[in-house]
Image 1: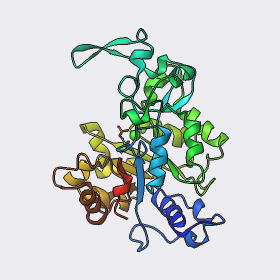
Image 2: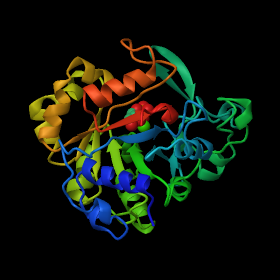
Image 3: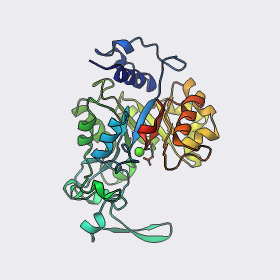
Length: 327
Ligand code: G3P
Ligand code: CA
């Protein structure tokens, strides 16, 4: 039996990302009218806990995801990386040193690379097995209270989410992993299928959306793998990225995604993006809203989120502070 709030989440997920199957599943009868859509009076926005509730707990740890769920998120947001032995893990960076104690545990396992003109030591995720990565402390960098927090496998994140919250999964740098002989897209879709989440509405209480900055990655999943899961194209800075927000770009994106995720400032610079995307049936879910650094025009992140939801008409918010989302 679904509670009204959860039922609302399902309705939102179904409308937002264009999959209607979930709307007709048992337990979703209230949401099954199929009338939701742009302009619908009862649509409401989704809340995505960015890297979990990452303002309050170390990003991409189970503690952070748990807190995001407690704070009322509709979705948690795992970024994906791949270990040397082929395990999908939830982790943001391609390298381990920013958010773990890898430099202490594996002091000799670095690579030297040039970053902004300086030779820098980095510890790439993909140079370590999953067992090795499990030895790392991914909590202390954030706060001593989280000492011993581990980097979770993607499978563990799914188990935390199952039946409680949706998954807003990001394929990170899939091309980099492709060069190393891994196929992130195929692996993700296979794991989701094996976990019973490979189809829209497979588990109505655990909806799945896949996002990426890589249009090629999303196109591959849509065209080659034929996934019917909703897909969202992330848009950051740079001329090539910005082209996706032109009307021609949006038309092109709508061939393989059901939503876009622009950096929030891009929508302030051109608020017409939201309406132009909606006219093409694309949901718009910007990122990243942070209490510690609201946008220049806002005194609080609550007022910033309210502006995006009520004035700009976005369909969701990706935030480090799920508790501050204006319900
Ligand atoms: O969901 C969008 C957002 O997560 C993209 O930025 O760098 O935090 O993964 P990043
Ligand atoms: Ca992300």
